[in-house]
Structures are given as structure tokens and as C-alpha cells.
Length: 233
Image 1 (cartoon, rainbow, N blue to C red):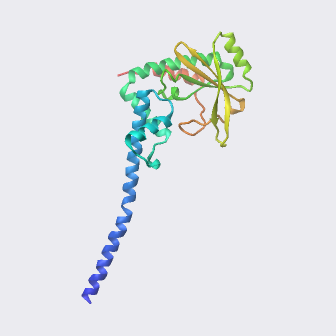
Image 2: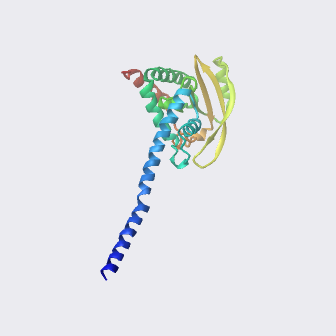
Image 3: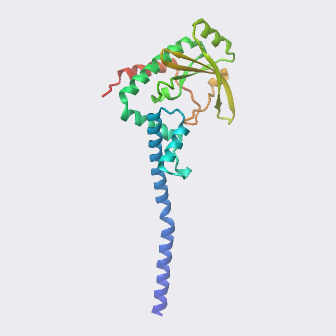
């Protein structure tokens, strides 16, 4: 009888150990994946800053290649890379980025004043302070007819290039909108002309996946004032 009791106890002990073996890897796996996401986000941000990359997917793919992390569940999303990119600029080139961001805000505000009747909004990486000079400024303008914008460009003697860009919306649709690109000083400016009704529901941000409402001229002026008063040390 003692031998049988010992056998049952042994079975219970082994069973308990087996269940523990099955439970433990899950938290460890989640922790490892979170760590890999963080590593990839910072590596992607470093690559984007050093190479001047614009596309998050490009930076993410390069980081995956360098670190060899093939599990897509452990890849960071755009918001995580954006947060790492902001930290990257603050840490490694705060003075240079401060000058670039100030210049971009100044040119954005000047362009917004030129196209004020179209209710411009500053969008994109210039808002977060991570835009490069090459990326320049992107503005959303709202008009159902592009001709008044063309006439304004002509009146101001601004050479431009026409194009179009595709945007996603909260209802799942993809729409193509006309764009006008020109250079102000050394800063590229892109005007994306959205239909008037898009004021209420603008296209989704590639970073947050939420409607990108941007900053109006007053908000850009405040941002510029705060940025100019910000100490560099």
C-alpha cells in the first residue's frame, strides 16, 4: 500500500510539473516578443534617422533584416517606430533637428497664410518634429474645385508640379486626391487638396490609423513660438 501511495504522489508531482512546463513559456514568450518589438522599433528609428528614410515600412524591413527577427507578431507598428524616432532625434541630434523643425514651421505658416481661404492644416512628421528638410511640409487644403488653388499659385508666381496621392478613410475606402508641390526657399511644400466634406472626416494618419486632423495656422504659430523658446541644452 505505501508503494501505491508513493506512486500516486509521484504521478501528481509529475503532472503538476508538466502543467507548469506548459504554462511558463507563455509569459516568457510574450516578454521576449515585447523586447524584440522595442529593439526593432529603435533599430528602425536609427536607420530612418541616419538614412533619411520617409517610409516606416522601409525602416521596419531594414531593421528586421539586420536583427533577424522573423516573427511578424513581434514587429513594431508605425506608432511605436514614431515614438522611437522622436526619442532618437532628441538624443542624437537635438540642435540640428531643432533648426530643421523651426524652419519647417516657419515655411508651413507662410504657406498656410497664402492659402488661408482653403482652411489649411499642417500634417505629417513636421507636426511631431521628426521631419527632415527633404521631407519638407505637407498641408491639407479643402476645396471641391482645384482651380482657385491653381490661380493662387499663378498669382504668386510659384512654379509647381501637379500630381496625386492615395489616402485611406475610416469607412475603409481609398481615395485619390490631387496634389501640388513647390519649393519655398529650401523647403519642399506639398499641398494635398481634399474635398470640402473631408473637414469632418479627414484621411487616416499612417502612424496612428486615426483621422489626421492636423494643426491649423493658430496652432502652428503657437508651436513655433514654443519651439523657438525651447532651450537646446
